Image (cartoon, rainbow, N blue to C red; front, side, top):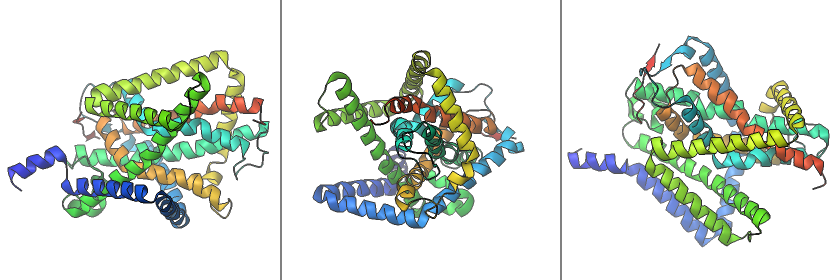
Length: 391
């Protein structure tokens, strides 16, 4: 490869990845414009087939990832240093803010309230409580913890990131999704078409997974503006919101990790803390605390029962559109999230990294739902890190 080609690849990335990714997006948009119903039907059929034949595999994958991550954190490797710098490049608060905001994203904002409320009104298969009753609160929260708790965060932010960090900062391999397969396939996955196809599939998966959360946010914000200020909740308002979101995303990405992404993450965390403080001070604090503890207890007590639930113990449609949907969604994000987490990772011990992302992240996410359940129960009829692992 001559110097000009090398410089061009550094500037534009792998041309195969670019062509495959853009080609898929253009093809998808073209099919959608040509026949949206046909496209939607094809997506629904593909998802139904995937859920039927791979749903249980997704569940086993997340369960194994979670317990392997626990074993790693509790072993001597849990004390392995992720970095040789004496002083962290990013403060703990800023790092944790970026982890929370990027891994939760728009989907977390939407489902943090939407899922517990749905399960409160329509009891999940693991619950015998009547929907809309006081007894339905704990099972609703527990089911939400199941989907957004230990298993999701284990696959998104711990084990895969540790593997990629080791391969990149110790072995000197590229910080790309394909590197996750290096321990299995060796050098051949890092060079040539195979690695390019892997990277392209990962990018396409993230693009497909991001479309939903952006749409959720647009409809959610549009409805909120309509309720609060009387704005017309229609296509024009939703399109305006989408354009504003796109501008924010572009600005954040272009200004880089140490400016835009950090700033937006910190502002989000400050805003969330402020809202939480208002709810705690002026809301039904005792009710929230009791419900949260009961939901957590129900989650821990029924963890294996909910994690291993299949179509033999739950309706097909429920498993497809809840557990399997979420787990498939998270798996699609995993490779690129591992790249991001490895890029910003500075925590000195891998066990601490696991603790932050598992215990703190999952329950900050799920805890946002308490106020929504209260409302319903009142009216139930309504930089290069330049780091390596040091043992």
